[in-house]
Length: 348
Image (cartoon, rainbow, N blue to C red; front, side):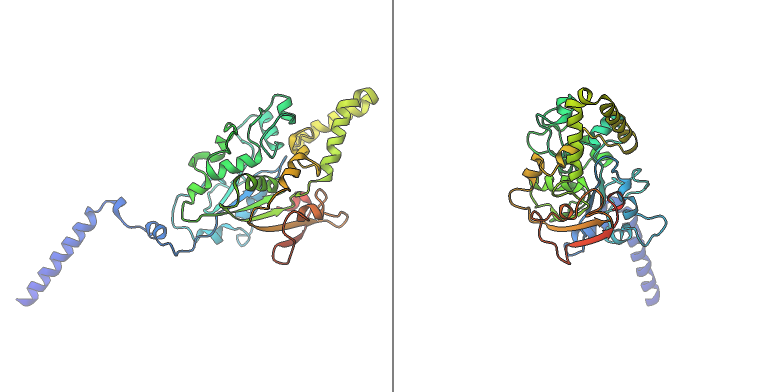
């Protein structure tokens, strides 16, 4: 009799347990994601935001760093997947950069709209780094308006879903893609900071963001081949352009015609506009760099990766000193400096 009572009690408890389980709605279950979000002690790496360079730079520049189809040991994605238990991350690598997936903690900003018109893409690829102002090339030709966003403003929008006060917010909506949120909203845990990994002019855009917004949301700035002090090639190119515009047809029509042909080839093959504002901003003597390199340096951790080729005192485009930010960024050391054997176009 006693065994029957025990069996009955076990069956009753089992029925009650099963009834309770089936009556709980899915959204009431405490999931692994909930536990991950609630546990303030769980490890969360900083999201990484990749920034490409101007002209032909794009998400493809960083594709292999994120996911390498030929060698899965080289991709960064496997180091980050294990630390994310949620589903609310960006899709900035999806369908761009040769990648078809999204990767938690790994995001990229493209400074041009892939779905835009070709003239618009050319302008955005060769854009002003700071906010457009009177006297800028594209403003003078009515391709852009004063207060339109430059690259630094686009970084600001990508992180915060907003632009600095007074800046026109147009031409930035494409940045958020389908998730409709800035990075700091997507990774909304406490004290979220990002690491910025930048190639070439992307590093100047990141520094312009820091000048505008401060360092409260950024932990590390890692620049690769960035012309912190400018690129002398930009000065030479700008002088050729200005000289041709002022005197070319008068002094030597054949020379002016040759420059126009070269400009057209560079635009078609390398998406490089030698007249564009990017070239002007990267002159060592530019107003942009004078402003960027003056004042107090934002308090983030700086790391410089410098490209080197044998026959040049730099990576073929940017000198050692400019990549190191000599006199502007913290002094180099074994901890914040690395040299790679690569030309400027092979650094990523």
